[in-house]
Structure formats: structure tokens, C-alpha cells
Amino acid sequence: SAGPEMDISNGLGIVHALQQAASVRPILVLNHRTMPFNRYQGFRNTVGTVGRMVADDKIDFRSFSVLFTHCFDTKAPRRIHRELGELLTSTVAKSDAKLQACVKELIAKTKPRALTIDPMDQEAVAPTWEALLNSGPPILNPKECFVAIVSKE
Image 1 (cartoon, helix red, strand yellow):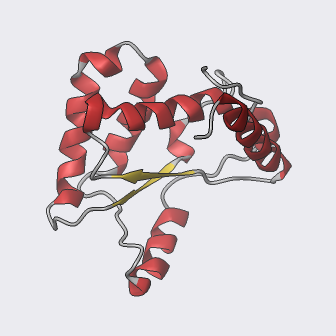
Image 2: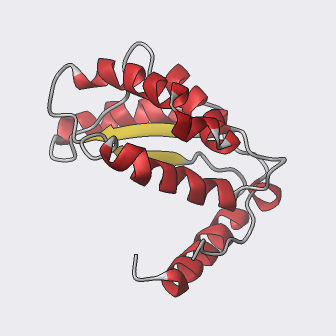
């Protein structure tokens, strides 16, 4: 990002937009190729940001879908489930309850294979979109669920 000021501005804008909707279906879009770098730091940052946007008593990761990009190896969609399991048992996840809750839900959603997309494959867009729409219940109370966030910096 361009710094804490930009993070705050973007966060407030996103939360305001979410609160105006009747319901939302959040999608975590994750780059599979870079996900394990630095002990999953980028993934942890994403979950941390999402965790700060959702009121503690309202967070339910069943409503979140997950889509992985950069899965160039045909075995990657089946491997993601195992990789998330390894993250869950690591010391990194054990110290963060929201990260644990998110990873547990993602493990369930990636078995037997994760939902992936190649943004250059136009034929895959419609079936992927359909799968995302059917992957979990929407958040029906976004005005109550999402809260203004501030940057960790």
C-alpha cells in the first residue's frame, strides 16, 4: 500500500460501501504462488485486515469464499488443502484466533480441491462465478457486521 493513511482511506471506503448493501458475499482472492512466502505473511495480513473490518462478535468465515490465482501446476488445487492444514498446525496460526477460524473454514472449502482461476482463461470465468455464488451463505446484515478500521501502523 501507499502507507497507513491510504490504508485507512481505503478501509473506510470499503466498509462504507459494504454497509450500504442488503447482503454481501466476500471473496478472498489469494495468489497461490506467493502465499507461503515469509511464513504466510501476505495471507496473514489479508486475514488480519478482514478481521479488523468485521465486528468480533459477527465474524463468520462460512460466508467468505476463496479463489486462488497463479495455480500453474495442475496438482496445486488439490495441494492447497494440505498446505492450509500445515499452516493451521504451525505456531504462526496458534497465536491468532481469527486466523485459525479463517484457515479452518478455508480447509473445509478447499477439500477435495480449491477453487482456482486463470484470469486469462475467459471460458473459466462463468463456471467459476457460479461456484463462488454457491459456496456459502451471504452476510445478510452488512451494516451490523462491518466496522470502520484503522491501519495497524
